[in-house]
Length: 81
Image (cartoon, rainbow, N blue to C red; front, side):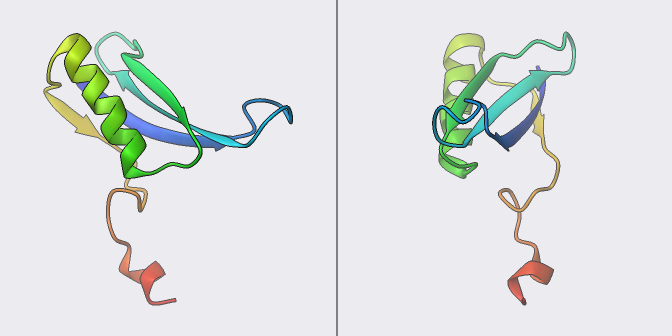
């Protein structure tokens, strides 16, 4: 499994509840979604929960990749502002 992971904050409930972030993974080989979870915000906790469930259900992925958003790395330009 080569998994692309990402989060998407959105009004998923169309005004009937709080804004949520959908945190999920997509398998590059088959475009399947091995797991996704709604969280109040996109944070490391949500990604760790997702990864734990993927490992328990399907095993350890070969690799993960992401879009370089600051949840995963420190952006010094933003920190200096």
